[in-house]
Image 1 (tube, rainbow, N blue to C red):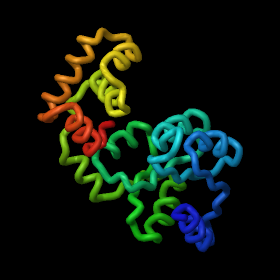
Image 2 (cartoon, rainbow, N blue to C red; image 1 turned 135 degrees about the horizontal axis):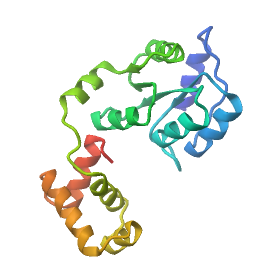
Image 3 (cartoon, rainbow, N blue to C red; image 1 turned 90 degrees about the vertical axis):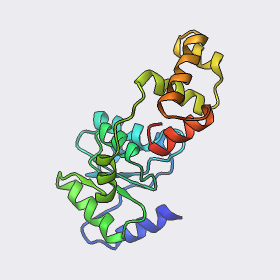
Image 4 (cartoon, rainbow, N blue to C red; image 1 turned 90 degrees about the horizontal axis):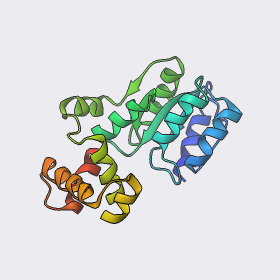
Length: 190
């Protein structure tokens, strides 16, 4: 319903044409390769393949298409992940409709667009204190994997996995594994 409303609003813009409407992240790359839009407007929270993974894949598969993230995920860590995926713009869904159209135009012109309040929050917040491997372990734990499953998936010993989980909890000053996952999620690191 929201996607349909956005498409209807964008259809009112004389210089913007919507060429495709998809609901799953796995459809993004093939659809963009087929239609070659100037700008792909993506959400992060998509089924199968998330929007940031798709944006990174688009950078390789369709370098002429720019990416604009339109999301509810207004966390500094998520913005950092989006910028690391080389997105061209990042705005929140609660922005006024005119802002979306203006952001699409700016991204199409080659400009970078980032929600100003979120950019300031990202600037003020420190970097993620967790290492890449700690994040790998924590992502699997967040998905419900237990220590033996995480160890097997990452080719680590169970003791090493426990050490990583303890280290992440300590660095984030969390009470337990659930609290560690919550803190990391809220910061946008997972």
